[in-house]
Image (cartoon, rainbow, N blue to C red; front, top):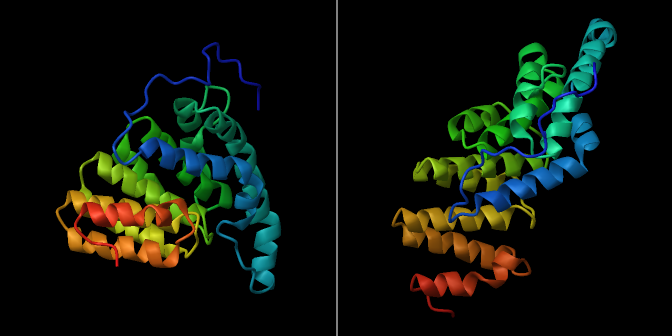
Length: 237
């Protein structure tokens, strides 16, 4: 593919959503930082295809593998724009190189195509197009202890921006419990609790705050739980 010749500065999109009380920016930054540091690992780990018998072996070598290689070549420049926060170009390409949407159109079903759903979803949300972001993230899946919870959690953030609080709560809970780890679980349990408070369901929020305090006491969220519990009337024992 040709080198990027776009005269506009690709690293600065002017359209970004306002920061919400649930700190959407922080959540997106966590997702992007993880993605940038682990691109090669993610590409190798997502949606791995198990070859069962000889016929599938031939398909893998002569059809599937070349298709995957082409898809990974296509996604390269979209990933570069994504890393520079140039989300419009990451989505749509620059006229010379493809964006995530073109990768999805041509190579959906490949590992790179699956990853393009994640990149497209995050890009849409960073541009303030929350529903399209949600739709793309729903089409992404990963057997991963961090990236999958992040995708679910970002979906929750987008629902909050759309004021779909019940959907956000469901997404946050799913993100928190899809992988039991101290990096993402307490973050999304807390977000679920805050959303429950907003919905007037304080008792449900208390249960999640106690879960954070019990399971993740050494995390930043765990150390703050007495404050959150006291705020809604649950006295420290």
